[in-house]
Structures are given as structure tokens and as C-alpha cells.
Image (cartoon, rainbow, N blue to C red):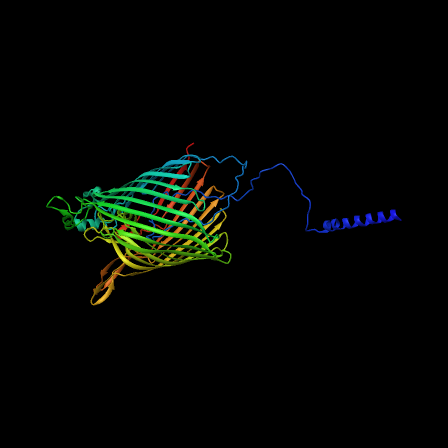
Length: 616
């Protein structure tokens, strides 16, 4: 009995002890075992879609110059995203793709239009790159036909232009994560004041074209430039970064023109967090522009009025009264913040400018620099509101890039602008991007042109500076179908109002506005067939532009317009292999003899054929 009692107690205790164990094994949410699996590591590079970004180079004579736009927009690349650091992993993949250090492009077209481009760049390096590029494109064609029996109103003689650019560049990254950069360049831009016909030349100067020398109405601009830069590559949060660039440009041109420019541009930035959750970057952007201009017109282009030469010359001491150097400068200080707050991307700052360009004394000016952006409906819609402004110099170098037929010693001013706008971007899919925008701008000393009446051939322009308000409404549409097809559509509509007025017959009348189109639009399609045949077609249109005001038979003012401009361009490239390709380009396929500037007719259709080759 005693033995039975002992065995009974021991069994009961064993069952009580086994109960919790059985219950723990039945609970699926509690695990008490550890499993370690060990196998051989196999690095794998997943297959992904190829991103084809083929290099494109504008490589031919442009029969349609770029549209005249007067937008002065500051563009910044700012990122507030700070990725977390991960340990680098070694992946044994395919061998590196072979790179080529050089690129040669040759072509020739009608109107005696040669093209030559050469590029050389160093190969892969983790701390340096350097190279050189050389470009030449020109045209030496004639507009209209010469008639021996009469002075033709349609013959403008040879209308050439030539552009040559040679630039050497390099970058070096130090062990302290500093990037040093430098480039040295020389450009030559040649053209002629060809804007007069045989009949105009005979009527004004009583001369046939064969009796004048081409050098008497030529214009050549030569530009030498040196740029040096340094910037930090450290993007850590709570680290101070900086960038500084110094550029020196010397423009020396026909008729004794010289413009020496020094540009200093730099910024200091610092990334930090607000309330331990909102990321922000603070910037201090500083710029300086200084210009020294001199002019000594012992000679002027063909057709100048003798009164003009007399007004410029100082016969008492035998030198030009305007030969003394004039120095102009602009200082800009632009502090601003970029930060994210509750889904809003905010850019907040201001521009404080010291204007010593338009007047001898330094005058302070303040401009807004604010933009707010917000995405809705899972990034389907993005809305941006902005209020920005600034002041930029209109130098001789900038004037001749817009209109190469300006008068020597043209007046230069600094354009001041305030822009208030809204932008709506629709990301309908990965293939479709739709953008709508509207801007209201006030521009003081906005640049335009008109013919100089002191040149009797009416072939030389002078700059005109107006204070205007402008409304701009436009949009763009882009459709991308993988690598095969890309469609682009964009257009703008403009409304202008001149703030400068005068009194005529007791009424307040606005001064006329010249060379400002009422609309512009473009449609382009790019097709890539198996990365072997690439084609692009582009249609452009530019609305009519007023260019002068004349009196009608009743004595009332009548505005004359340059007709609407239409352009169709086509380019096809066949890539034989990685080293050799052939191209064919057509410009102005509608063969329209359009006028971008008064009395300056364009070429008709241009055709250019050529090849590109990489030297081994």
C-alpha cells in the first residue's frame, strides 16, 4: 500500500509537469527552436530593362533660329532625400563595356555648308577626366539670283555665317572629396550685314553690288574664355558644403568693340533636420558680374549716315568720344531654404541685388524667391505656385547671340523681372506626362530690337528696352513608348502691354512692341528601330511679329508684321556599328523664305549628309 502511494504520487507529478509542455507545443505563436541554413553564396545580377539614351548633337545649319524668349528662370538641382548607408557588396558581373576616347563627325550640304566636329575624352578614371572638343559649321550660300539687266529686289548676295569653337576641359577629384574643374575656350562667330537687295543698294548709294567690298559690311565676334571651379562632393547631413566658380571672358569684335567680363558665382549650403523629422537645406548663393566696355569706331558698317560718324568722332583730338572704357557691375545675394513639411516641398528665399549696371551709383533691389509644390492623388497631380525675380545684364556678348546684326557700340542695360506663376503637372502613367502653366511677369528694360534709321540701307539693328507686363499661358505633352517612339507637343500664347507711353493728339498711347510673337508651338516625333535606324521629325510654328509702324494714306499709324513662320525638319541616322554611322538631315522642308528679322530673308530648304566615326 505504501509502495502504491509512492508510485501514484510520482505519476501525478509527471503528468502535471508534462501539461505545460504539451500546451506550449500546441501554441502556434510561440517558437522555441532555432534553425540555421548554410549554403553556397551565388551572386546574381537581375535582368532589367535597357535604358537607351543615345547622344544627340545639333549638327547642322539652323535655318530657323531658336525662338525669341524673354524668360529668365533660375534653375536649381536640389535634393532633400537622404538615403541610408549600406555596406558595399562585390558583384561579379559582366566585363565593363568598352569606351571610346574620340568621336568624329563630318558633313556637307547645299549652300556650301560644311560641318566638322571632333571630340576627345579620357577613359574611365575614379578621380579625373579631361578632353577637348572642336566644332565648325558654316554656310556660304547666296540668296536670290543676280540679274544683269536690272537691279533685282530679290537678290541679297552671299549670306554667310560661320561658327568655330575649340575648348579644352578637365576635372580632378582630390582625396578630400573636392572636385576641381577648369576649361579654356575660343569661339569665332562670323556673319555679314546682308539685309539689303541690289535694288536697295542702287537706290540708296547708287552702287552696283560688284563695286562694294564684302569686308565693308562684315561682322566678326571673337571670344576667349577661362573658367575655374571647385566644389565639395560630401553630401552628409549636418555637413557644410560649398561651390565656387570664376569665369573670365574677353569679347573682341569688328569696329573696335571690346568687352571684358568677370563672373564670380558660388554658394554655401548646409543640410539639417527640423524637429528631428523634417529635412532641410540652407543655401547662400552669391554672384558678381563685372563688365568693361570700350569702342573706337574709326570705321562703321556699309550704309551708315555720315552724321552718325560725325556724332561719334571727336575731330578736335582725333579720337572717338566714346572710346573711354565704361565699367558696369551687378552683385546678387540669394539666401534661401529648401525643406519638406507635411508633403509640401517649400523653397523660400529672397534676392538682394546691388545694381551698378544701369546707373553709375549702386542701387539696392529686392526680389522674391518663393515656390511651394504639393502632390495629390498618389503623385498623379503635382501643383506648384511660385513668385520669383532677379536682374541680369544684357551685355554685347548676349545681344549678338540673340541678334547678330546689331549696331556696334549698342546700348546695354540690365533686365529686371518679377514672375508670378502656377504649374500643374499630370503624371497619368509612366508613358504620359502632361504639363500646364501660366505666368504673369513684369519686366523692366526688357530687350527687343528695331532698325537703326541712321543706316540708310536699313540693315543694322539697335536694341530697344521696354517696361512691359506679359501673360504667358502654355503647356506640353510627352508620350514615350519604351525605346521605340517618343512624341512631344508644346506651345505658348502671349499677351503684352507696354508700360511706357507718350502723348499723341492729347491721348496717352503705348510705345509699340517689336519682335514679340503672339504664340509659338512645336510637334516632334522620334523613332528608334532596334537601335539601328533613328529618325526624328519636327514641325515648328511661330506667330506673326510686329516690326515697324508706318503712316497709311489717311495719316493713321499702321503696324506691319512679319508673317507667321512655319518649319518642318527631318533627320535620319543609320548606325552601321558602334564606330560608324551615317546621317541625313533636312531643314525647312516647306521651302519657306521666311524673315526672322526685317530685311533678312532666310535660306530655303537645306540638306546635309554626313557620317560619324570613332577612331580606334
